[in-house]
Image 1 (cartoon, rainbow, N blue to C red):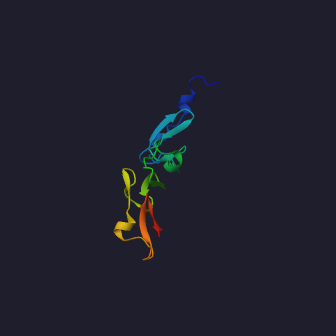
Image 2: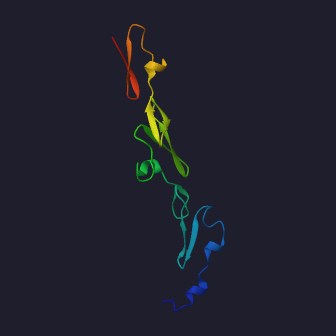
Image 3: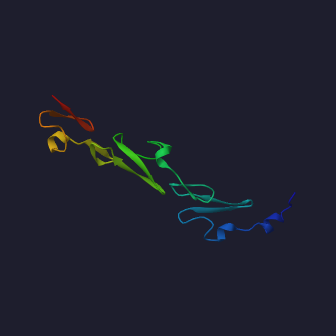
Length: 122
């Protein structure tokens, strides 16, 4: 169909610095170009945010079991669940609301610490 002269018609879109966003790699080809996106970005020109939280624990994000993954543009963060404290991608430790006095048990009930919470009992 095209006997070598098509290469003369091909334009190198990667010569334009705005073809792909910063942090990505532009790859020119005869059909146009492709952007190799940095982590956290998707789409033909890396225009879409990758939701690492939806992609799954262990495959993309590293939040511990006692933490919740929160998607951010181009990345994510891990926050310990209520009743836990720490750094969500390293460890979240149970907060003892009974010992710290942050429980709301009435005076006539006993506070018993549980994982991530507390219970008020007679």
